[in-house]
Amino acid sequence: MEAFPRPVGGASLLVAFRPVRRTVIVVGGNTLAASRAFAALQAEAKVLVVVRGGLEGACEELRWRAGQKQLELLDFDTLPTSQARPEDFWRDGKALDTFIYQLPTKPAMVCVTDTVVGPTGYRRCYDAAFAIARECRHRQIPITVADIPDLCDFTFLSTHRFPSSETGSASPLQVGVTTNGHGCRLAGRIRRDIVASLPKDVGGAVEKVGQLRMQAKESQGDGEGQDLNEDGAPVTPNEPVPQRKLEETEKDRGRRRMKWVAQVSEYWPIRRLAQMSDEDMAAVLDGREGLRGTTPPSTGDPSHAEGNTTTPVHGLVLSPPRRGRIFLVGSGPGHPSLLTVATHAALTKHTQLVLSDKLVPDAVLALIPPGVEVRIARKFPGNADGAQQELMEAAVEAAKRGLTVVRLKQGDPTVYGRAGEEVLYFRAHGFEPVVVPGVSSVLAGPTFAGIPVTQRGAAESFVVCTGVGRAGKEVKLPGYDRGRTLVILMGVARLPQVLETLQSDDAGAIKRRDGRAYPSSTPIALIERASMPDQRVIVSTLRDITTALDTVGEQRPPGMLVIGWSIPSLWEKGDVNILDEGAEARDEERVRTWLGGKLWRVTEGIEAGWEDW
Image (cartoon, rainbow, N blue to C red; front, side, top):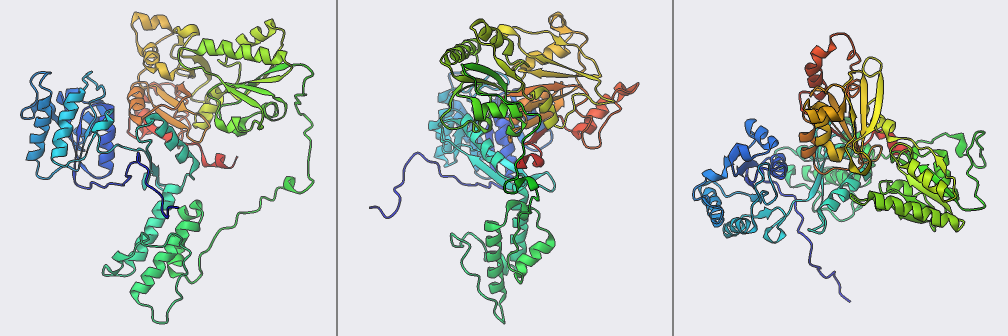
């Protein structure tokens, strides 16, 4: 037997690197370069971005940050010995090496991002990237090259920085996930799942514990407490805390206080840590009262008492059929608490086979009892019609064998859920399906995002449409009506075409739009994974939503678009004078106030109250 585990290769050495006031060089001008530059700026590094073509070759975010003096942006073509011809790719390595040699200090790292296509269509070839990597390694400068793992000394994790629960600004807490090159998009999904599973105030908890640690150190005075840290503590913080001495030295007091910090960090609930007051911190550091915990309050709900059961008067009971039957069931927008009683009963009591759409979340599928077969639709791009036919055939075949089949659809089956096609198909094959309504994301999605689809003084009506027609054909979108909210399902993937149709006055757009064009200042909300823990809402204007979506990272299907003046109507103090006479004249000012002077705003997750459902 081996006393200690054998190392298994293939992992990365994960470190939290702080290049404070050191130089980070980013080569490239695409949105990935902007992401790398922003990460370095958050780490308080000095950022130099080298772009072929200078400002013209840089994306909008890099140009803006250069204009704000947050970073320095240089034209690669102005570097000494830069390539004059495409075949002289090796000169780029020499050019960057000469540039680095002239810097006052050696850079902390180099990030090459233009190996993926940038705004101008330029893409660096492997040999040119290799030439840069070779020179960096010669100078012992760590380098990462996008999409070329064999040239990388390190790679970036898929990260998330938690906000402060008090101020809403960024907290010190970050989490990162890497698959070591085995699935970058999957790393993003795993990161979102991890983030969604943690309490919303975990960032605030880290801030409070940081304050507690600092107070424990500063209480020593004259820097004597600077050698106190939790890093050298035992694996468990339960090592007994020494009893107070009658004459306790400052160092003894500091060590005892740091152990109290370690214990509250390990055992207090996250929410309790995030809510620590100055008095709580003083009590922890003093230690006279010990560690005060929290006791969950009693619910006081009489329905939980033993033997207290009730039966609803009005209950829809789906009786087990004598012959095979098919249920078309709506699962709601995603949150399992939004299932109807009928849907819950169909999934947990009556079904023998579930044929589910691929966007129905795991939280809903987890309700299905073990032993019930579940098949997930293979509705990937280009295969939707084939997968639809496959599921309908499977439902009929199972029903003919006497099984109860639940055809599970997201939202409501009849709202762009192809329920009509399936009803007619099943009826033609001898089965009259039972359609069980579901909560539609058309209403639930905006509500979870804090957006009313109708609001007195802002939106008198709403209309729902799809961003894509049958067999991928374009659809005719409604024209602009100031008092109407437009909800578009399945339109995010075609956002540029949707925006052109809504705003443009060229002949093609007019043909695809039923009415006048939308002003570019019209508010728009992109709601992704509505009602789920990793819900994301991006609000902006028609003018800037594309840039916003390109900047915030990978998309999170399913997504929906909400367009209209109901979006800012309930934000903070609210704005319900939108339909007043002459209100259009203040639209640009109204948008600036709503967005706080920014071009867009991103909100992650759902309200804390839904955590307990």
